Image (cartoon, rainbow, N blue to C red; front, side):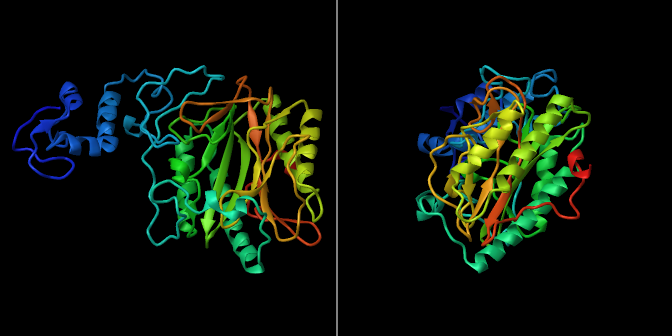
Length: 398
């Protein structure tokens, strides 16, 4: 810390300040907000104060830097939370990028009105009930009352995803899609489940081309020929709904069309076997068999999951063959099936942001997801397409 003027107030506690942040002095930033009364106040404010330095560095970046090439937006969003909550540096990190995608700036976190019921991570980003719940080990048989709530949450989730699907076209940023998801969720009285979940900074996951899952919506504009998965989850009346679809952006090549359609069919074939008495491991056998016949591979690092009052719980259901998951389906259980299918190898890599998972070879990946209810005689797709759902998949209209 360096000496400061006595006329300034401490940015942390408001007392007269005698010290200034040395980095702010180096960057020639205004003294207001950079002065502190003691080292203790400086240290206490560091986690938020350091963003001032990052914004100052970003403002000095030229328009031809990688983070600006695809966007006319300002730099203010290039500070986003990683899994542990730390801020990102303004320069692209050193990473062996597997494909052509790069991270772009993201906007400020969107707010949720106070009157909307919120999950326990909405304040500080940390789930409290979920990790230690007995439902991580026992598959819940839901009561009729909970099932009806699940139907409502899943219907809203479907309507939100449909709203996102209607705006997908070349030139639209994934952040703009996230805004549509956020506003549609709020308008329905729900909370976007991913928002702040383990510090995730946005209201849905949007995964483009080689991104397998957990892509962070940002300022990159969708381009003609992209494929884009939008994964929507809504918390409503104390329960979650969860679904995703992969969409075509403009004119997509035949290989990508086949990948997306095959992934859709993998999910449909898996759903067709769901009924009481079927082993959970059979889901992976069905998906793996069909994906392999189509010349594609199945991601192994991520699985389907139970869902209800908890966002993620038992059962965990792998999508690949010869998995060792135990248990059989029973009426009243709710869970997702969400195969992630790769055009190349099944292996994945994670970007330095701690969230974005990409294919190891940079080839495209697709995903479809539904939330399901096991009934006495079979299955109910709680997130099924509605008569009002946009007609975006050619194979459904043929």
